[in-house]
Length: 305
Image 1 (tube, one colour):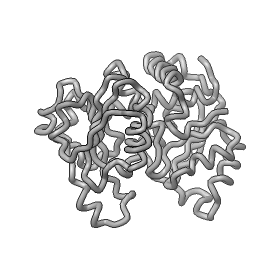
Image 2 (spheres, helix red, strand yellow):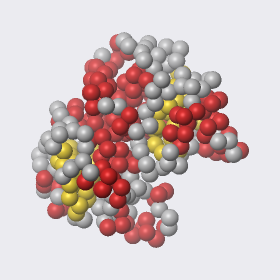
Image 3 (cartoon, helix red, strand yellow):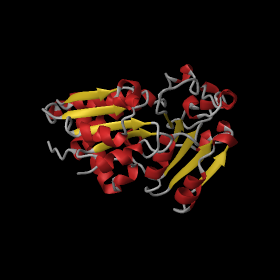
Image 4 (spheres, helix red, strand yellow):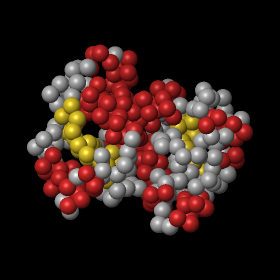
């Protein structure tokens, strides 16, 4: 039995197989329509979510399976004080696989250690978001044709953004990937990622404050929102929330084939006027999320079609 807690839980070769499977699902959906018949996915979401939860549910339904679960801690026994360990032990009796999102870092790992079914980390605090990373990798590879020899710009909240942390962990394993880290001083990448991941692996990166100074060199720009829920005080959030806004003027400095990605939800960091630009692929990215989660469910349940 395998779990997905970190993007590093799969080797590069295993990721290639998973992404190939996702592309086959995209091109041949009918082939997989009954692959998970009589299988059940439990979605245990202790934090609010739209895309991640619904894409997991859509993925399982597309595979012919069924879904059960809860969409908030208040609607679960967590409100009565039940631990994650106890919850997953019970859910192991009800479902075949579980996707869990929790505000505390490490909660998914705790669940996996006590579970009798595969556990998928659907986001744990500011730590990791591996299925979003799989979505990002599939989007970039499908639209760029490769995951190596790329310059990736990461913009916005790099301190608390778990999607950014997961994506860096995954992409440093590919050859000649360079990062441009674009953020205000207060939201720079955590020291452990700078030292233990980027510098330790000899990955080329630079840190800048102005998006305009970096956008012209990028093959892909990964925008993120400043997350109000990760801040300890309202004053800091208000001061930083509008620090970066991607608009047509800034986009005019970019390459014609640069991809604009965003894990969503968007607040105002990408102007609506950008949505019609062919380089804006964030809504297409959300669609890729369903295909890759379908592939992941099949892989963790050892189902071959």
